[in-house]
Length: 322
Image (cartoon, rainbow, N blue to C red; front, top):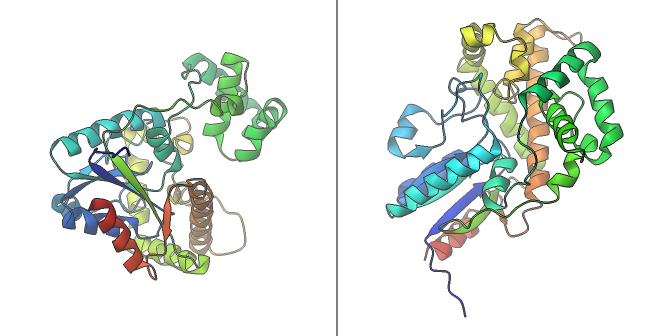
């Protein structure tokens, strides 16, 4: 019988507002661990309150990796994350510590644990051409074009998601093959230097998660979230950017809705502040729904309700760590 002698690591997954951060901190302190963030918003400097980034005290008490590695006008791909995360895990295990991969960005987890498809690299000229077309025709029209050439991809990408529409069209124009075909040909990543326990924490009752999302967003507002977004808007690099709302950082849930609110966009008859709050909470719920859908595809992950399954959860971790 083969025994996996690699050191342990924990992949702590879950939808937004499910309590991953607090649990990761608790385990890191108890088991002499370090946290590797698997969150596409936490990589950006300046996205603190709205991204629920661990504060200075928490980061001082437990080492964190892959937080604040890019400026908000920059990009950070899943492939870059996988490479950086692998290096972090190797460093942590080499020092005899426990890596805790904590977050809710499914694409990042997929890139690190399962690999990405070898599709064409980004091409600046092609992207510029697509963006020029979008400026003339609108992104809904570009989404309609994607639906014609790649129906499976268009079904998964919203017409309001210009970044993913652009990438799907770019891949097709560069290779002549739909991005959905490329995505079915994922290349397995190099083996991690550890054995991984996959844990999903998520309230069994969706209403509980929705209540947590609303309460957390109200706490963010009280902590000065809108002032944080105003500071981002004042950065010269974002002020001069032709389409700041298309940047991955600004498209993060909550930030996009705050940006639109500060731009003066209105959709219904509610007060502007009330409308903004409702839109941000709804967008966060939709994000949680997408995260749960992805997590259900992780067939080797173990699910726990953090409120009712705490004993079973602790038993699973203790048994894994021996």
